[in-house]
Image 1: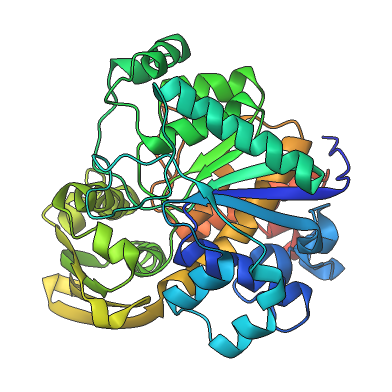
Image 2: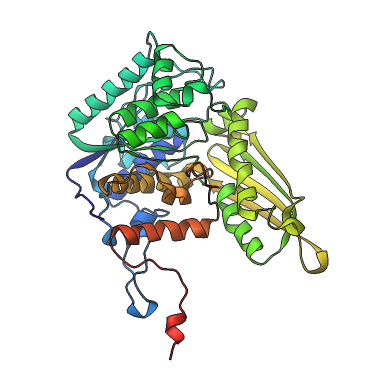
Length: 434
């Protein structure tokens, strides 16, 4: 498969310039200035084995695949408060002020554009820096104008859009989402089932810009958006960045299943004090996140195939807004397991993590991999990027793959395929043939 060369600057467009976005942008600028290393980023620090183990070919991923360099990234985005990136990063308090002060001349010029915002979809937030329009079609056109203005002023040759905004209320697909034609009529008719995140996604895909959804919102996982992505040959990915507690579930659950260890209960609770925590204090927004978190164990453990081990598993998830904690999330898990002859055991986990620190390298990897996908002629759902999401998208007739290690194998084999290398099955029998 031929991969087109990258040329010139690449724009990263972000709806929702909050803690995650500011931590990502400041982090990339710190890496550019050689003030820090991109820890957590597979594209920058990961390796990939090529060929047999005896060949010793293990290059860095960014040496093997023609990814865009972070040095060529420029940033723009939208938010409901009129601030620059330095002010946003200071307010969120994720990164040390000394680092932000060293990057101040890079961050202060980055001012946010007015956002498409509807309080109906994010009830716990208010903002005055918002767009006005006669209908949702006009709002989409305003986003398109913003993108074209950004492209011209920054001289970008390609752009990627990645949603880092707040979680919207829980929605199920409705008639307006069922086709592109119905969706476009819905824009003109101000259909109440078209959310702000869908308006951003529509504007991006209409301009041929790849889109990733970092929240559990119903956005590009609707037929209308998938039709548009296919029509304009644009890659899409989502949804919900896999950062803290769910990341650990996708590591631990496959291990327990591999050893045929039973699970009778898995209780998870979090405390979080940033804007995401405030938004999730609304029960309808929490339901969107809950659906994303709860599905993981069912798909990994497959209770219908292992009824003696997982049929009666009780899985409970809680998120509690606790302002003093800020971006430093804490997750507690109690896992009741059972082993040989049904004897009970327990696992306890206390994960003190930094939400935006875990999310920022995901944003970088997704931006670079989506650009690679587009330059490779890939379009529509990019299932090989499931590694980064709590609720990975896949074709309607498939079930999503949640096992982190299967996801990793799929991602790396996709890179091998793109570069004409042999796929690795890990069979290894040929090493022992006489």
